[in-house]
Length: 315
Image (cartoon, rainbow, N blue to C red):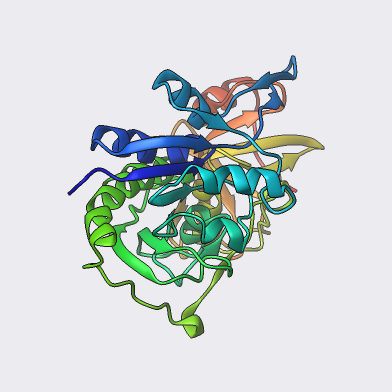
């Protein structure tokens, strides 16, 4: 296949493997669009996106408009680049129809779910929270609706019972890069026909918020375990003990018939070097790694060296 003249739009770490894969496959990336540099860290210094860092390292022109919906000059500049196709991966800015139609072959998106399930901002974490057995990536032709376009290529992968939001994020970013390179020849040649999504099967992956991180101990243990895994590394599941916040980094659900199930949800029913066992609405949760306020994450055993939890109750 003749190398394509591509534009690439992406911002976070998730998009980096896709850009790298396009370059390694020999495609001509004529420009990279990424969000403007943002203040970050304690010093609030401006920090470039991971995608911008890779683009500059590879000598690619970088464009950082604040908006493509409200900047006609930026749209005209994009159109003048004469791209065959624009690849969009977690860009974070809405693309108007004028941009979607600018490249000769339109725009394609790498989305981290098996569409139409989990359209939206947080498909990786929502799949874990829901207890889905599998997820995957889709290479989708973009249209005006949110993740509603027809799908050129999809690759599924099982969700491991110990998978976290972070580990699944990393796996899907690499899987998406491979799927993108696989799909491009057929898209360019017109031999890979996109398949329309069934809107009746669509679910929406709302953006994550810190408010969701607070554990409700009345929920079943397996649901809380999924919350802990899905919210690692952000926003991290949390509870409180005697008014102090505790972040829960790792936990395992235990069977509903375990001793201590009659205790009120949130009550510590056992604590030893293997973990801190807490009663829930159904079953127990064994907390194995946690983080007191102002300290680094630590094992349950290390935490118990500093205090006793007999009869304690998490709020």
